[in-house]
Length: 327
Image (tube, rainbow, N blue to C red; front, top):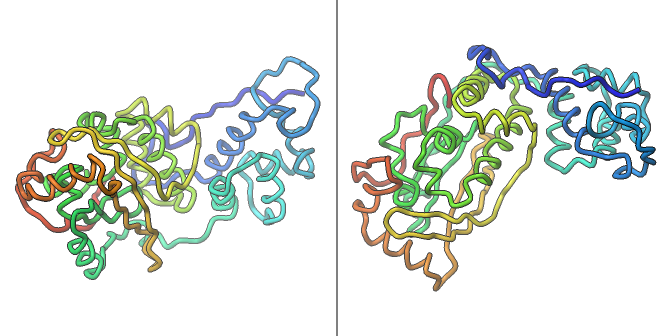
């Protein structure tokens, strides 16, 4: 029997989100499994497709259970959000059956077997260690910043301000990549491949939600973006997750034009869940010369930054911290 069509809109994806509450972990688990199952066909997992009409896309629950080697009733309970007492072995089998990536496998484990976090830790203001601020200041000619939970921008150097805009001019709660990408039109111009940047941000927030479903600030951020951005709602409903630690970004800077920069993300090992992100250009390339020009212009470049974010010419790192309604 075919599964009945079910909603794919999570609890934190619309106007009715309670900004003081966390995300519904059981609903997140349920929707994640449904969306992963929906993207597979019987032939993808070695099952025959008899061409019968399917009321919903993808594998049926009984087909997925068969491939994973668990009972239909057991898998159905899990997909309904009841992950209590599920073993790591069963989760591994389901992850293999669903062809999950490493990031998706980790996300499934976080949702089904969540770690206990103190609520005050979720609401605690993130701090950047002084030594890291000194490191940012010492990185010459390379845009670099510290990113924290919920895609917060916690600290940055002068070159990051010259390329991305002077974040010190923004209220603390707006120093957040998700807010900038979805709510600030100037960042649509800055990122040549804006759609990819938007997808990456939402995929990261999904990973964060799996690790910290009880975080009220994350829930508030998701709720606000869901109300204000149709594109965010659409991407959030896909339940896609991934980790991206390096790559290339193509930018359209208001002063120097096109920039092709390689980025690297280094997760800090101090338990803060913060990352150091750097951008650099290929030596001898036009982008390297453009960065050199921005560095030589100093405060003038920082003042220009991204169109629409007016700077004051201050250099050095920004103020760490998170906001109220969102990080």
